[in-house]
Length: 98
Image (cartoon, rainbow, N blue to C red; front, side):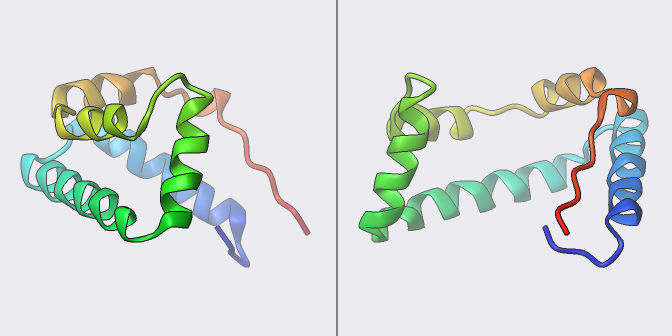
């Protein structure tokens, strides 16, 4: 995203990831985010452009729109928390375009 202070934003993201790794993701936050993504996904069917773009992006991963919906629908909090543990701030990269 855009920022006048990209390093500060990157540091905030790293701090939040570390906090989530330590404390876990709250069930309430997880459920709210999951519902939000499902809603956005369904709303995307109102736009032919969105459908075409999504299908094009997914085809690279040998998936289609219905596979993506199933992945979102069946996502579990424990899985995301395990993914967080694999994130390493020493492997992170910040790219700034001026």
